Length: 312
Ligand SMILES: [Zn+2]
Image (tube, rainbow, N blue to C red; front, top):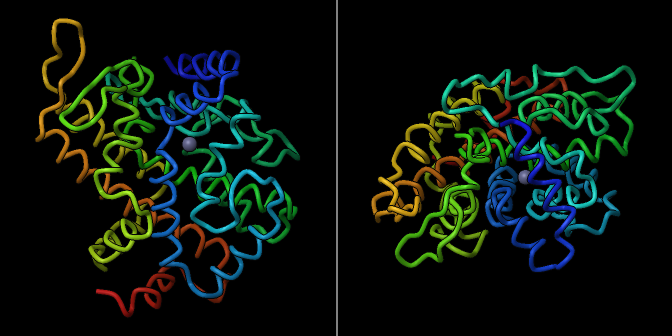
């Protein structure tokens, strides 16, 4: 099953000449732009001033023209880049199977980077967990080539978000929910994966700045302390658990045609889970960036104290 979503991506890329179809395929394959922008905005709130300045300076070198240059927009860059770099498609998820929970198998055995190869040039068959680890190391290393440093930052801004989408950290032999057709009151029928990418995010609001501000206002210091202790692998397994218990686990019995009519309770619970996951992703993205760019003068333990001093 690990390859099937890739095959699907390849298929889509080969047939999606028409812009509308390309847009449809894109929206079905990742947090939508809205979710990624919310993650970027939350992360930006928790960067130290020094690190935020460095992030802005690195992003100022982006001449790709794929997105605007602010942190929130750049958090969507990797989805645009994927359209012309299909070898990066599998890096956006990890198909840990609900049936076995084997994240190492889903990460293709964690292939190491070939000698003298930057993370952006790594093998196509790798998972989002490995890529976050690799790009974080590159961003931290002062000897990283400036062009690769920009790519590392752009991929991190996006992939930390992706791995928090429960259906980007799981699979139930259905391409992460892309094979399940669902409907709910007030939401156009679509795929389960797309519901988690965008429909439930839109339930939080359509203004990314307002959504991010509302989520930030609810994030407690205790949550930050808990969330920042963990590793990208833990974050993915946590999202996997939410897929098992909620995204898949709370699905109703399908109708006779195999389609699911989601009850209001599913939608409200999923929206709460999405809010939690966007918040976690933003806080953890900030942690990665503060750690990587904060320098030795700022220890990992103290990184979050100052930015959160004024917050509850
Ligand atoms: Zn993505």
